[in-house]
Image (tube, rainbow, N blue to C red; front, side, top):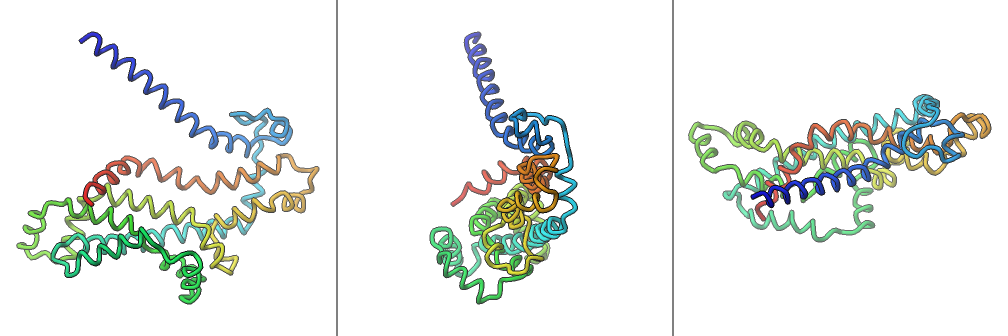
Length: 289
């Protein structure tokens, strides 16, 4: 018994050390990016910024926040994320609920078609031509055209199938409609899965770059990630034109780091509130095939 207790203590110590090391490795790039964005030019370019900021200077954020393009693209990303996630959840929840019902005609075939899209896709060029033909070149087009991911439908379907059938039968005897059963029984009992899928969709929408960069022609409709990419390609020239290379109190690289930090702040704020549902939602939703 004494040996077992000692072995458990040693195991826990090693586990905590490894977790601490992994956490430090994961957090270091974020901490360094924050420090680099608010450090003055001389300490940064001389290599003094290793972990914490040196000679703190917020001028880079003042310049960034005065740019109209930044706020326009930031607002666009919020629009795509909020309305896109709502639309994606609506389609995924209703589709998963229907596919979870054994009384659905051709249920096997519908499930096969959904899973089939996870194995095969039309390819980039056919997809691009299809989006162009559909007129996906505006805000609402971006919201509706990228509404569903097959994996998330399957995850929700499996979770709905785990709800005891006796509860549904009791509700049906009481005269509940399909909408009432979905809203009053399935959704409240599936909070973990719903939170997980919502996080998947919101993260995907927030980080969306590729299709937005090639489909959206109006610069007033482009999201933050496209702005970030364009700024990363030309921020040195931009700052030189705005202030002059010799008058900058911060390194041009600090401007790039500032944009990166601003682009991930919302996800960092939201994730801790949803993280407790994350593992439970994926595990319980992936039990059945």
